Image (cartoon, rainbow, N blue to C red; front, side, top):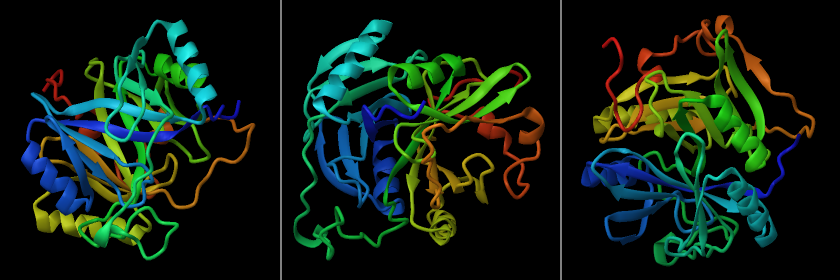
Length: 318
């Protein structure tokens, strides 16, 4: 089935950090994001071409990881339909006030316990001063600082039961599964879209058997050259490069993975122009033998990619 489009898009994500000052410097100076207010222990940050006020809510916490992932509904009626569907699963928590610039949000969890929210009412970002762009069809002036990430692209969760989370994203939230990793013992990864992009949210198996963790958060840049430049900048800034630059087999994006100072994995991603337009698209399944070949050009997947997540946990056998 094609996406219902009751979920318009992945909107903004709360990132938890036990090193708030260092992480703020990472997101502003290295990623090139723009501060857009604060509240309590949280700082609101935005990528320059996201139309809403917030891309990342960076929140000081005892341990790193992901807080609430927010999705915008396609219309008030779409919001009510998704709330009813979520309530029927027993995973709903109820309505809360949204962050500054946002209306009421219905809070729930996926089957793995990741906190999520869905809302419709929002204020568009209104730049002032030097942040006003030269072209009015752009949300904000290009910052020209660090990587200068353009927008949020996707989020990848670690989960205990990939199938349960996949089915929830598809059957309850109205997404479409585009690609999967299918090993001999079952589905180990699922890529889901709510739009015409290849994917907006991913669930991959947590090999530690821990629920509720973050694998990575991804930001889009305009070109492969931007990804390569991000690697050079990471080197200059003393930022840990985990793997890449290289090309993924699944979804074919050009990638670099780094860790923020708290250990949250961040991807710099050039998704190129791949879109899923077919309403009768069938999920592409990748076997264990195919995955053993590594990434698209043969780079073997680094071992930490299957064990590292936030919050950190002890890895069995290590």
